[in-house]
Image (cartoon, rainbow, N blue to C red):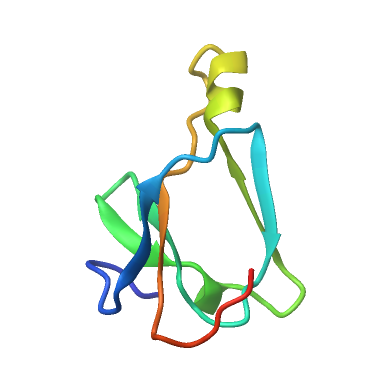
Length: 86
C-alpha cells in the first residue's frame, strides 16, 4: 500500500465530490489517492483493487442528507505523465 506525499505531480488537488456517491472502475493507470483519516496519510487506491473492482465513496450531499453522520471522502489525483482513464 502506497502512503504519504505523492511522488508524482498532483493533477487534481484534494477535494470532496459534490453528489451523494462517486462510483468508478479501476483506472487504467494509478493515481487516485484517498486520505486516511486515521493517520493523515494519502493512500494510492489502484494497487489495492482487482481488475473488476469498483471504487465507491461518499460525497458532500450525502453528508448533508445524513446530517453529518456519514463523511465525504477527501481524495486527489496524481499522475506519472501517462494517459489515465477512470
